[in-house]
Length: 291
Image 1 (cartoon, rainbow, N blue to C red):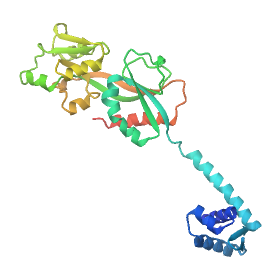
Image 2 (image 1 turned 30 degrees about the vertical axis):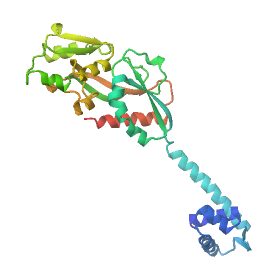
Image 3 (image 1 turned 60 degrees about the vertical axis):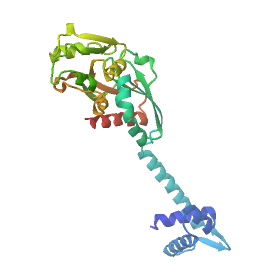
Image 4 (image 1 turned 180 degrees about the vertical axis):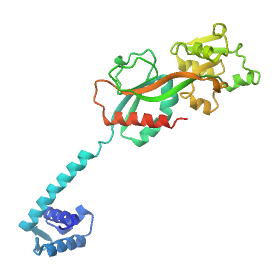
């Protein structure tokens, strides 16, 4: 068989009826086109083009080869398109808990955007009591039930609860002291019961006598903790960036208790597109690299 490159040149010359025009399409010199045509004519033992001035008029044999080559190109293009994944693109609506979105998801989202620049991610911040059926989303991230029963969720993170407070509040206490009787405990209505669980399971204080200040949402309580208003029971992986940056401390790291699993899933009843699958895969990969 003649080389694929030679047959491509025959097709281009037959289409343009000009060596020069064919060379521009193929991004080579006219002499390179002429050389390829001469080689294939020598191999076949016949003339494919009649030269008249600057024109190259295809003979029936050249037209036959060019037609076969064009059909082969279509077949190859269709085969490549069938096996090559369609690039992820479009707008992806991601519903995520407010604190998780602000403290974990959004700071890492640039790595997804750099990998899939054609996908625009719209983060919809939710609260624990929000009804997902009332939200238009493509991917949902949840840290506690309810989860739609017809979904196939992926485990993203298994977080743990620990007591965090500002460095200034830690310094104000007696070094090494485990006494929390004078500490103000912060809690939120959006994460009920977590403070009581930590106090009970850690054995650090009498939960009935603990001084408390309640906030409507966890992220407000978290801001109060960073400002030194008190101690807060928080998911330590979700707020890990604040601990790493020294904005919060966890003085009792050996007193963590199990929290909840953070899962993600595609919206039920919809076909899972490439952007959705790519985002879920990215979530799992990013979570696996979280210390």
